[in-house]
Amino acid sequence: MPERTLPEDSSLDSIWSEVVFTEARLTSDANAKEYAPAFSDLRGRLEQVRSGQIGAWREELVAQAAVGAADDALDDWVHALDLALDHIVAGDTASPRYRRYFATAPSLIIRMGLEAELGKVRGWVDSLATEPEAELQASGGKLKAIIAQGDAALEARRKAAASRSDHRVRSISTIIDDINNARRSLYGTLAKKAADLRLPKDWPDRFFQHVTRTPKAAPQPAPTPAAQ
Image (cartoon, rainbow, N blue to C red; front, side):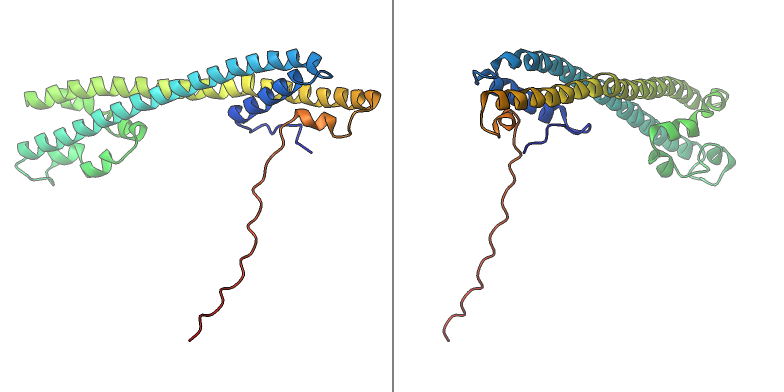
């Protein structure tokens, strides 16, 4: 017997397959085609929800790409500042001027995720603005722009994640519930009709996809030893 209640965590592709099958199977049966329009409507709604899901995924991927771009820009900036300071202090990385920024090794800062790395360097903007070297002052201006870029990217990612979660709760869960209710109602209606028309007992089950399981391979006999 097919499962008429689809799991809440089913993919929309698998649910779409179930709905399309039931719609088509109802349409092909003279005793059941009157029930097909309800599933046609559900299919149309489901396809809109699937489109919304793809849109939400796209927004999240775009936001993640923006986070990656900001992270790369910040990593490159940290590397460039390391080179500039190393030149200014003549390689003395134990000097107070160098360690004002790099008490932690630059490589460790670069390995941080964007949000943590921004937290590490955010306070450097004002300090760099007061450095005597024009190169370091300019570096502070670049950092300010990168921080703005990173903050915007992280906020866009947070919003995209929230939007995807909202879409699942408000749209995906709702359509799955409606489809499951329709499937249960359909089965009850078909079971009654099968009894009234004296149709085969399995007739109501024919309108739901059956899960096909791959049979286990039969055990193979042990090979016969070759003659010596």
